[in-house]
Length: 329
Image 1: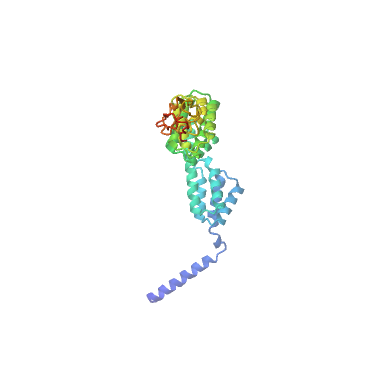
Image 2: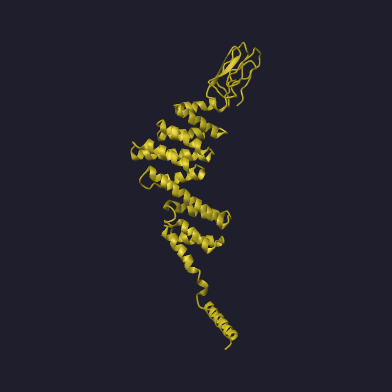
């Protein structure tokens, strides 16, 4: 037999073997063990079998490959992320599928969710030695809203210092209220640094859970178009020892919306409402003989004078005219 003939015979034999293998019963089910393995992983992660089947079916309808489904399963195993992340990761997959987001983008989102929960779990364990799902979830919400890891750690450190001598229920209540306040500020686009300063100052001044809740409501109800400036003003005032009552009463006086207490004298024809301060002002105007001044105000948009003059650096100077000047808000 020549070499060419031998090669031809070998090729024919190999072709026959491959064809025979393709005709074996069950050959088309080669992928099934992989799907079953994924489903087993989901159940092992604590997911109900019905839910595991449902999510796999949803992923197949959304054209996930088996490799992509396997990666989702890996995100949900206890070895890859905290148990607290299972529900949020599943929710993220369902959300992405409902919105028609490509599978790879959904996978990237699940990684971010898992990583947030891993960090949140670590921070929560610094605050309490036992697992606390609400604490972990609220921390994860803070991170999702934009609070940075560095500032989250700073807040956690301040909380540890503040709660070290408290009993467990009191400490936990303060932790929850503090993190809810941080979450609210992050969701309103207050920067992480400003959020951490405000909260750390409040904790250093001895705020408890009720005070922290009141602080959160004060921030929410300020009605400011510039929440960053409002939060900075609150943080600075708390650092100087201002009470919650002073913060709340200062919302109108310091927000730049109007000056309440300026009093121009009749000789200048000035108006008593001309002492508007800007977002950095804490004082209120007081006028005499035609000169309204923004007492204690330091902003460039301080109160206008009662005689038509306008204030610079928070000090109105009035002439003797009959018109009332108005400060900028």
